[in-house]
Length: 63
Image (cartoon, rainbow, N blue to C red; front, side):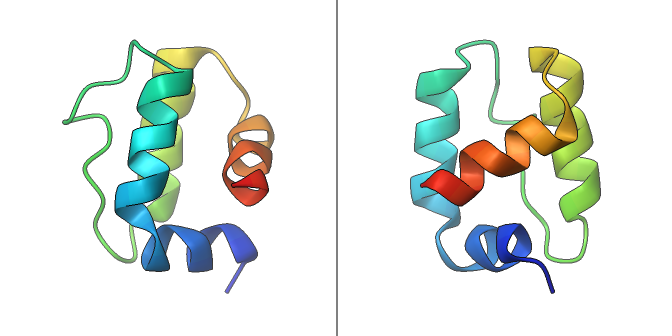
């Protein structure tokens, strides 16, 4: 399992708040997390923000 997936699993509420601060365009629906569907979550964030998946993973890993 990647570091990003570990972080999502363990600290989702904190990460969600930070993502909302960084990317105001994200909604609760965009940030709905389900274990095992991390790639879909990253895809929704990518679509809304225009960032690459790697940029989003790097942001999450820095938290």
